[in-house]
Length: 186
Image (cartoon, rainbow, N blue to C red; front, side):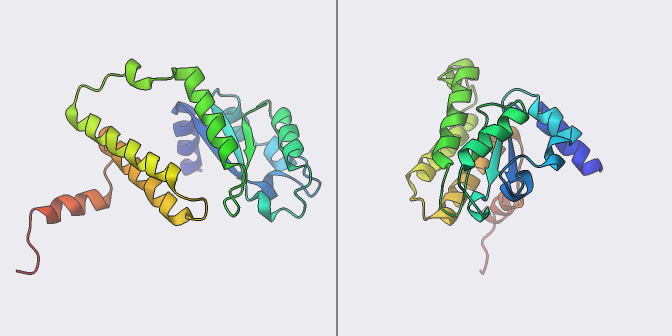
């Protein structure tokens, strides 16, 4: 329970929240919203916050995908999150463009077209890491839809670059720093 409480608390403090939900759990067999989601207090608290998006994943696993878009909108209306829900499939990439467009539009509306103008980076190191992040994101966008593993690696690279700005350092960073100082095998 403590882990759930902390996760909800961290999500409430985030600028943007993306709630990934398995479509089979969120929708019943008729593609109507499942009662278990409608009655969850933590879930409701997150959905009431601005910049919260729901991604109905694995829609390719539903018995029937007929009317899935209408079902997603009905689900969104029942949760008071109109236009903030997107059904997707990682297997066939259905809905990914819609999700990216929805997020881009929200960011543009909330923070303007150029976040860089609002937030000048005074440290060279921060600019370099942000540039690395952008390069990884550009690479991600150019990767074909069938190259999911390569796409995931580019997103990890972007995340690591941002982590270096925020101070979040992973084990790979520690090992890189440690072994860059030593010559192994001599």
